[in-house]
Image (cartoon, rainbow, N blue to C red; front, side, top):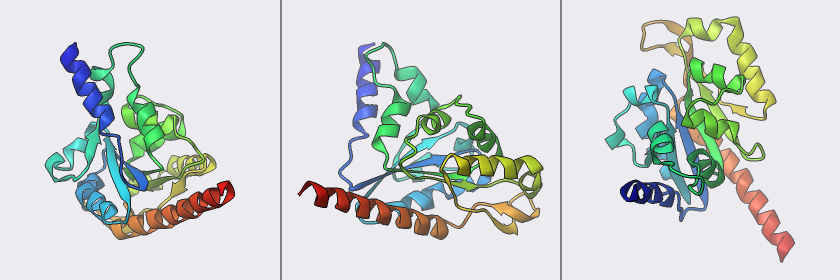
Amino acid sequence: MQQDKHVFCQTVDSLNSSGSFRVLVGVTGSVAALKLPVLVDQLLQLPGVDVRVVTTEHAKHFYNHAEVAAKIYSDQDEWELWKQRSDPVLHIELRRWADLFVIAPLDANTLGKISNGICDNLLTCVVRAWDTSRPLLFCPAMNTAMWLHPITAQQISRLKEFGYVEIPCISKKLVCGDEGKGAMAEVSTIISVVEQHLHVLTEESQQKTDITK
């Protein structure tokens, strides 16, 4: 019990940040998750940005944990380390920590969950608890046939109604061999959109500072 408590404290302590902006990256079970190490590396090159990652279990299949230059949180961290009422709840701690949440990739399964309010893992719990005054960006990624299913457009629209920002998928030859729309946006595009939102956050922070002077 004492050892578990120590590990939990280390988990929560790792949310301490020296950066000016705290970016939480969500990664789900699309083959595009293999780009996670590159995405994290490029985010960390932005001035003053600190990064943490929240992963679904299926996403782990596609990337090498050792190649990701940021702390990764998964369902195990939430469910195995909470022992009593006085312990922090990880999805709430992550929600409080992050200034911006970018889900890249967002697979069809998690898209369906979020659009219907389902929160059955750490990542979807963070989304359900998210402060909608803060940016949440999502990058759909799925097979072309799945993308073209009529329900996909409905679910994308629902997320936009929540105030979330889509970084649209692109057309290319997919890993499965199909060619068409459904591939995750290029990492460079994602970085550019994140930068735009961080710029807005900088301006808002400056305005608040000016008001208090």
